[in-house]
Length: 148
Image 1 (tube, helix red, strand yellow):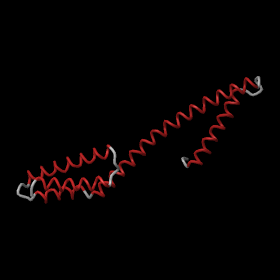
Image 2 (cartoon, helix red, strand yellow; image 1 turned 180 degrees about the vertical axis):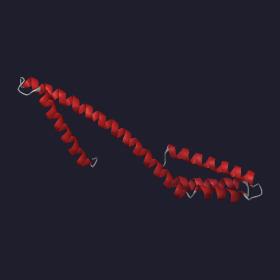
Image 3 (cartoon, helix red, strand yellow; image 1 turned 90 degrees about the horizontal axis):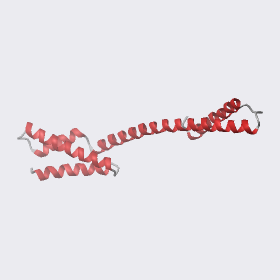
Image 4 (cartoon, helix red, strand yellow; image 1 turned 45 degrees about the horizontal axis):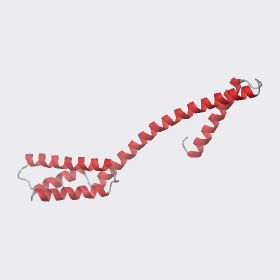
């Protein structure tokens, strides 16, 4: 078996794997890494067992890696975990910004109410009431969107 036949086996494996993965830059990087890993393993096995047929060595490496379906499933699981971690970070920042904004709006609204009513409504009482409304709105919105 020639190097060209080994290359064909590897290319067919990569092609089958790529069909199962999304078409993006990360996938291209994964496929290049996978191809490099296969060829490195092949060279290593050739050094250890030079009398073995190359197609047997390549098939051993591909068997060790797993089927294209298994590789795609593992990649998809990793992507889902990465997105979830990224979303958790974004969500934390979102909640901090919302909390600060709600506090600023409540203080400004309380100040305006206090001025408009010429002191009939105490500033601190208005802040507490408006913050209470903000908290209630937060919980209602969370319940509606299922984020509780």
